[in-house]
Length: 231
Image (cartoon, rainbow, N blue to C red; front, side, top):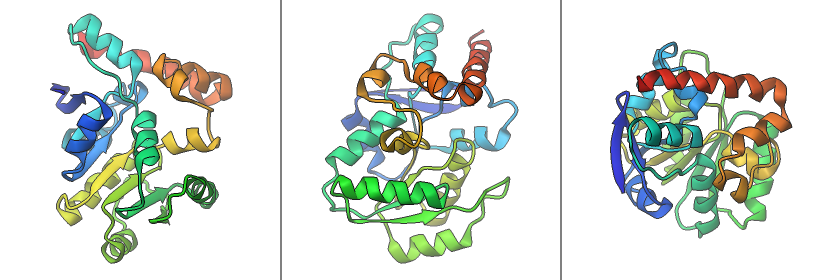
């Protein structure tokens, strides 16, 4: 497993099980998309959260290509989708999990999906709409009472990372917190139907564009701005 820094963010390149072993020590795992990394100069809260995270995985195939071309780094892509999928596939109802969802609708869909996978040792929390204030005392009380081993944050990028750092600060790395955002929605069908093959051949971006061009075409084009960080 390799570790390296990019713009002050600590990335890990390795297999799922190598990174899972590190993740199980506690802390925050993030999976920044290329479009999000392209935005770090204008979103300081998000950027600082990435720098404070414990593990950043290589979610973006485009970012991996740029690293190889400009930095001569041979890296291993491991998307948030793949990390969460293997995590759920291998889960055996031993350790408690808390899922933080973005809406009541998503929460209901996710609960049904988890139960279909025979996952039962979990609770869920529907997050309020966080703006620039990520203080959530109700959530902290919920976590304290439930005491999960894992926390999976399913809310959007830009909000989930600061929330994860806030939770970690309150509990001092006693839990493993993953910021995989829409990854579970790809599995449930609530968002673009990404699967193992599409993820493997770096075509998640195209699937998203075909599924919802109004949202994802602009976001994909914005990813190109990340190239400026390689000069």
